[in-house]
Structures are given as structure tokens and as C-alpha cells.
Image (cartoon, rainbow, N blue to C red; front, side, top):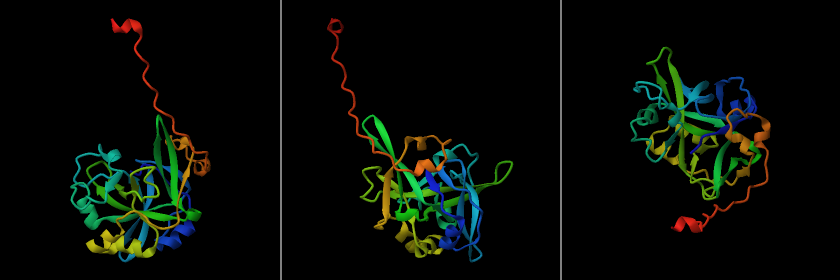
Length: 237
């Protein structure tokens, strides 16, 4: 699952990487959360354009937006068959710029958040899908992030990870390729530059959105689950 991510790279670096024709002047986001507006890149008339869409997919046929918060991710293994995603998978694919994402590792009674990124905090993209919903007072455009099995290097943190695309050939395959091309990029990221860093538990609060969230902290130690106390003598009778 991918439920939080960061996009703090300079707009010019993002424009160059994705060859965007109409770049938005982005503000750094250190803790992007579901139901917030985020930049996505779509192919239109032979060029890549950046737009702001809301995170949490609402299929065009949905009667309302009630399930949007639960549609922030789509499993790449089943995306072509699931009714909520299959049309978008065929016709409405997008790139979601990022430079890191957060996952929580369970440590006994506690959880330790980690930020997963590329060496040097280079920007990359998640494979995404988008939809336009027109049954409300105003049209709403939304997106979801595709996930896959975790790379072995980070599966101790979480068993799933977002589909990460880091070079133009992968961008093109996802945005413009046929089914066979798309399937080649729907896999765990296996580049040698994958980095994971323990970070502050402050990232769990969506109101926190500042550079300190990216800083490494001491890794929490696993705490054993408390053992149940033996019954008191009186409770035996």
C-alpha cells in the first residue's frame, strides 16, 4: 500500500525528467495524503501535460464519491480485470511525480515509519490511473497509484510497494504502450539506487508537512507484546 508520499524536487528538475510541455509551479510537499490535490502527468495530443488531480479514484460510472478514500491504490496484478480500474487501465493512464514514499514497519506494539526513495532524492513517478467524474455539481478528476509486490530489500518494512518508474523508456511504455509494454513496467523497482530511511512518527499526522519529515531518525527497537498476567487466586473460584 502507498498512503503517503513526498514531492519536493525543484519544478525544473521535474520538467526535464518528464519532458512536460506546460509545467505547474509546484510547492514542495513533504507529506502528500489521500483526498488531497497532487500533480499528475498525462499524454494529450502527442505531448505530456501536468495537471492537479485529487488522490482517490472515483470511476466515471460511480453514483457518488463515497469510496474515493479507499481507492488510493490499485493492485497491478488485477487492475486489468477489476471493474473500478479496467477502463482507466486501457485508456486513462498517468504518471504521478514523487521523490519518496512512506511505509510503516510493525515492531511489536509500535510502528516505525520509513521513507523509501532513490539515492540523491532524485524524482521518479508512480504508475497511475485517472478518471473524470461528472455526476456532481462540478466535474472532478481523480487518480490512483498502482502497487506491486515489494522488492526483497524492503519487504521487511511492507509486503507491497508502489510501481516506481524512473526513466523515460518506462514513462513512454506506461503512457503510450500496448498491453505487453505496460506489463513490462508493472513490477517491483529493482534499481541499485533504492534507499530506505527511518523517519519521525510525525509523518502519521497529515497536518505535518515540513522538511523535518525527511530527516533520518534512530530506528525504533521492537517491543515485545506484553504477557497476560496470571489470574488472581480469587478468580479461580
